[in-house]
Image (cartoon, helix red, strand yellow):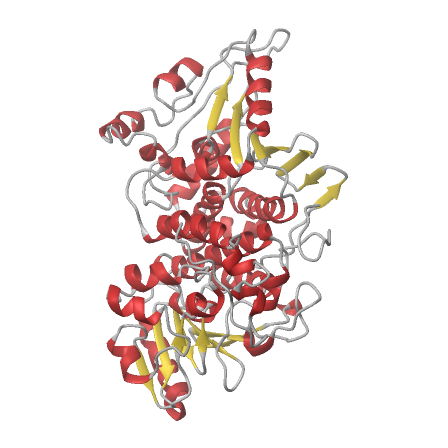
Length: 559
């Protein structure tokens, strides 16, 4: 396994559930849930640091991610969520500094990426699931704590002379807020640039009326009235939601996964890892069961409903590979199964899209494919006889850096030639971070071509037709297939991982820039660089000396 903290080799498991939470408490009252952060100081994911002042590490955020998912799937009756602290005089001090100080570089960057994705999930729940998050800041709220509050739709803050919001990373640590704080200030909350500049360069933060005037929070109330105010706000938000009041949720039961040697296996997804070459071959198996006949039958199927089962398994695999297999830099996607059955499941997702659960499944799939987009791994897709890259599964092809489709079939293989098939879901159900479908992102030179491609929905496209439509990169025949694919994969795996990460991130997000692309593009690139600079992590760097009373010694050259 990849080196993480203190040279350890223990894999991180992203599977959890509320009875295992150490750091969060969930409670429910009518249409309102309260998600209270009460971090256990000695409950760190790794030894060597204490999670004081509600500071967090990856383990805290794994629980938060799980809670957000469960609120969406298990609690359709919940229409608004109060995000607050379970401690009396502190909201959240942000990411734990000593954890960051002792972490390997890759761990820090992956930690920031996952926390970004989790906060994006909160915003997605508010915007798309109509489950609005309200942050109730009941104590000092610094750094990543304020970034957590910024993910909410509305921020209430106690006006008590002690509670403030701050982003002190630049003056204190010589790094940047790692989970979108800078971007959310100016893009989401529309804070004036000059005020944001001042705010991000002071340690003590801003409180009271000025915090409201500067749009850093939405409302301040006396501490004695905060509980009533957050409840009143949550109920107002809940009244605007279309979530069903009497529906029953589905249980997100524990995901079954087996790791045997170099193979990671789920029910519908498996990965075979070649660590010597740095390659993971990921195969998705299409559905075998018939499509449920109604939305009610889909709900009865619960987590066994193939699109949801696939989404959960692929999501867990991506997180597992990103965190525990850092040197496996190449993911090769394959699929096996019945294309007609995949298309039938897509038809059900489209037919019943107004149903709350089907909406959540589609949104979950959207988030999974976005994880592929932002993962610092090279991705190739191989379309061969027996593949079922249809509709939803075609998104893996479209998300890949390159795709290879066999033209015809291999000698001795009596299966029909490989085909691709598009469905309605490829045209807006799973947008990228730039707001466009992956097909639109491939046709930025002429978006009218998307309408022409949409006319191909439902057709089985062979290699020539897929190439003509611009859906695949190369179409070797059986003579060239093995050598061309092998050489391409080996060549890619041999390049500098650093150069590839920069190249891929630059190429994947053409077109409109959004708050999300800024966070995963600009922020990830800059934080990746800054986390390696001596001014932050050198022997005399600010992150290293934090809490010692010594001042950092900066190299004053601008780069």
